[in-house]
Structures are given as structure tokens and as C-alpha cells.
Image (tube, rainbow, N blue to C red):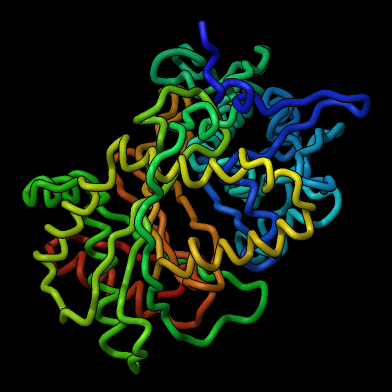
Length: 446
């Protein structure tokens, strides 16, 4: 029987005389060349507990969890042709959660892990580089960490972990399966397909930036059922509804700023979890994106029209065949022999050019919906608030992330700019729909 040519690209763990190391997956391979201490590529998930965090127990739980996720307990190394992830031989320690989220953490600095855990008072946060994983993988790590932390406090999960609804929570005594760190893009590489049509350059908000190292976070809490009811009334998903709200806010900003003949498209990136289409258990990156786009040369659109157009744009692009074209384009490059033999310093230059052309230049902002946080019933009473903070970007400046927890839908904006106008317009539109929005800045500013 013929062997699928994708198979030799799937498993990313290697072993040599220096020990275990991992190849970067197809989404992560570009990140070292385009991230720094400000645009760090770090997304964040944080939870608050019902009592102050016991730092000794947290570090104990963290050491055990990192040992269960060896493919995460790595740092970045440069080879002659490619970056690779080298196994750390020590356990990570939690950092104080002081200062801004997702700042002053450069994965290119020697010895820096690809993630960090932070804690302050009753808060635990994990920040992961997109070079390593996406929201699904990062959430699996956090949930496993929380279950182990509470177990050390004598609080049992109240459900069987590692199975069913809690299959993404790993018992720390189990061994990692090789599917957990496989490259899903290479596993499901569809072969040669027509590449997606090129996207036009997008308009970007212009606003004074915050001082270096500051990342402003604003979180809003809405009633989940009320938002779901509004979406159902319009026959759209929550993600489609929020994408339209984001477009509406961008449209207002575009209309208020001086015009450039090149910047007449506004677009919102919607990340898509590919695990819904393709079978894999990977905890590495396995997501792509859909762009909701409007040509402002055609004039402003009403909100109801934006909702309908967001719905149909999502439906047109959010299907396996359209997604396969993106996988073929993105994963095909690393299979090309000529690309593979190019030295890394040249690849870095090419990566920056490619990212400028196919990356954030195409989008005015993004909104990422991580879905519902499911935790075992024994742990749920001990958690309060939850937030999912987007990775910072010096190009788009302000972006949003969404997560559902208990009865709430939590929308969090992260921004590198002083201006709060985008957030204000976003929340004002939600309130115009009759939705109650409770907004809080990280510094408790109104």
C-alpha cells in the first residue's frame, strides 16, 4: 500500500546526542523572525481563584505539568537552516504578575522559554508564544495545571480527567502521545492546490502609542444567553455577530480619519480552529484565519447589512476545501527543496517580507473566540473571573479576544495605544442592541 507522503512530516520530535528537540510547526516557523519584546506574539489566559495563590504549590504543580508537556518546556535555538525547539532540563518557575501582560518576553533571547506562568494575589495566568501553540493547546496546559494545583490542595476534580469532555486535561502520571506534538498542517497537507486569491492591503488605525512595555487591557462582561439570543435572532453565530460589531467600529474610525488612496479596505481577522475539520490531537498550532473585509470606496454600510455580510463571508470561507487551499500554500513552502536549503539568515529576511505581505498588513484588527472554558465540577466553585488576552501587535495596535465562562461572555481588548475609541465604539454598538456591558480596565479605570 502506498504511504501518504505527508506522514514523514507529521511527528516533530527528534533525538540526537544532545537529547530531545522539536521542529517548529508550520504556523510557528515564521514567528521568531517577526516578534520582539513588544510584538511578543504572547497570548494570555488568566483566571482568578477564591483565595490567594499558594506559590509553593503552584510551582510544584507547574513542574509536574511542564514534565507532562515536554514539547512545551522548550526554548528556541538557531540551526543553520531552521529554528528548532530544544528541551529544557529544568522546571519553569512562576513569575510575579506585575506590569503589563505579554510584554518584555522575547523568545529570541537565549534561554527564554516559549511560555511563562505568572501569579499575583489570587490570579494565575499563562502566556504562550504563538510560535509554540494556539489557544487550544495553551488552554489544555492551563486546565491541566489548575487540576494539579487543586489536587495538591486536596481538592479533587469531581470527574474523570483525560476522557470525554475533559480529554484535554492530562493526568500528570501519563506519558505524552506523539500525536500531541505532531504538525497538523503537514499531517493534513492536501497536495498541490490553487493558492487563495491575494488579499488587499488593509487600513490601520492611527493613534499615539503607549510608552514601550505598556500594554493596555480592557475587559467587558456580557450575559452569554443574551448575546446568544441576539445572534440567534439574526441567524448568525456569536463569532459572526462580534465580527460585524468589530467591522462597524472600524468603519466609524475609518470615516473619522484622513483618507489615503491605498487604504480603503477594512478587515477583521477571525481565527479558525482546524481541529473541527481535520482529525488530530495536536496541542501545537493548528489554526488558520478568515478575513471579514469591506471596501469603503463603496460607502458605509448599516449594521444589519454588516451582520449579514459577515455571516456569508464566514460561511463561504469556513469550509474544508477553502481551508485546504491555505494549508497547501502555507505548508507547501517548507516542503520545497530550494526553500529547505536556504540559510536561516536569508529565511529570516524572507519571513519578514512574507509576513508583511500575507500577515498583519492584510488586517485592520482581529477578534479571536476561544469558545467555552470547561473545567471539572470540583474545581469550578474555586474560580472567579476568566479572561483571554490577545497577543500585542505594533501594526494593528488594538485587538480583541473572547471566551465564555459560566454565564458570561468575556470580551478583552489589548492595545498598544492611548486611544480607547475602538473599544468605546465596539461596546456602544453592543449596548445599542440592548445588551448590558460591564467594562473594566486592568487598572480599575472607568
